[in-house]
Length: 517
Image (cartoon, rainbow, N blue to C red; front, side, top):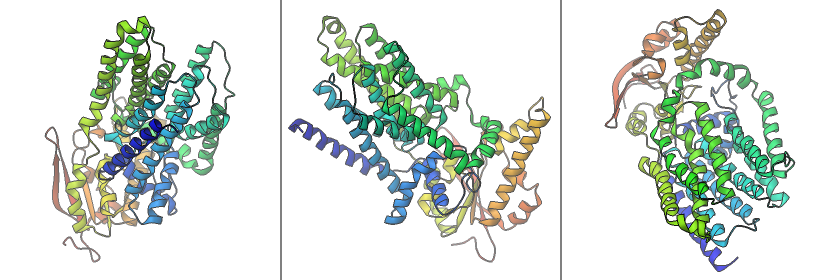
């Protein structure tokens, strides 16, 4: 290794350590915090999709097991272990991407030195407000695969061992959600168009990607049949409650920020600046954006892979433009460099402006939980994951529910109110979902009586400004019986200047627990 490369990796190591230290001081995203709790229960014997009710496929649970096990062995917090785990994966991704780049005969020394740095920034800065989400984890796992595709697009070779390893790791990323499979399909189509022949599917990375996805696909009905038998049909009927309109999804501010890198790409390609890596990442960005639209939620973390791919496409174009000494490039070098730099700054501005994950609810509720529920359990009637998580993780109490939120009820009740009414078969299925959700709430409260219950007073996913949880559940005798032990003790209001949310706080008062402390 040259002295320059050694200095590069020394600097990279310092950046990696600084970023790790920074994230260790922050909250984890609510979804990640829920997965840590749910995965811990699975390791204790709970059955996914029966004792843990989650809408996403099981691979995310499997990938969360290493940090949860590490936390138990080290007696550190699962949150800290997860952050370290993800940073180790980021380091491995950067190193593997660099190893793939080293196989290229066309990559210049500047390109080889700069791209690993920009990969690190893409995986550590762009995900700041959604650090650790499934989309972030997926991007970490599949980036070396995208670099390998760019190598193949230039008809360059890669050692079979590295290619096989890249494909195997990519199968873990693309397998996290079925929507992600759009990307490898588009990339293969891109390679076929580039090569003008239908060939190449026997490459080691494609074979290992296919084997990994096939093994995972076979494991789902074998290990977690309830996911296909219960969760998928339930989700198809009710998860629309969380959907956004296509217009809302494409006009979110973080989507509009993509306009800058798109213009840079169009400007560069119209200048006949050929960069197969940028082309590859542009194709990947298109596939990830299609995944964002198909999910139709308008949530920022769904767009993260698109931002990462756009960032790397823009960086690659910037580097190629810097080194292209042809007359045609000289005429447009200055505007291209200015636009590319501006595009990168724009992509970074959103996560930097948002900052790391914050949770005002957890900050305000923590003293209440520590006072009334220390060593016990809490519960929340809400449709938002951020109410229970990371509050549970931060306080060390139990979560009394099998659900992260009440995600089944909003869609079921909304569809049952539809006019015209759903057909008889659909209505019967919706009543089944409603009955299951109610029974699950009562069973969970009976099995693990929470010391504190938070009741959300604003529930827009139900199609109305305020859904009365307690009024709804008090129609059921079993719930009325157990709720007699609870007394309202306070109200919690959170506000960030643009909105305000309020929660009633109920405390269990019986022989084993007093509402004082």
